[in-house]
Amino acid sequence: MDLFFKLIERAIGAISDVIWPLFLPFMLLLGLYLTIKFIVKIQPETSENGRFKAACKYAGGGHINYEKYVCTK
Image 1 (spheres, one colour):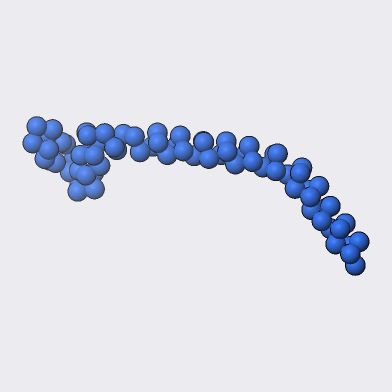
Image 2 (cartoon, rainbow, N blue to C red):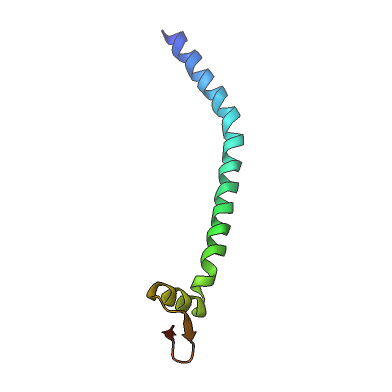
């Protein structure tokens, strides 16, 4: 029984040694891609004008008067 567990341990170790060098860089690149995509997507809405555009869009307004920060249709 002890021999069986040692074989299982070696097999799991061998599989892990093969998978982690492939899996870890993939996960890091995927995380980097998703971070950049998220930043690019929300960047226009985080600027001063973008905030008002988003607010007017949700309020149903069409045009923004930036001097008064009022949404008009």
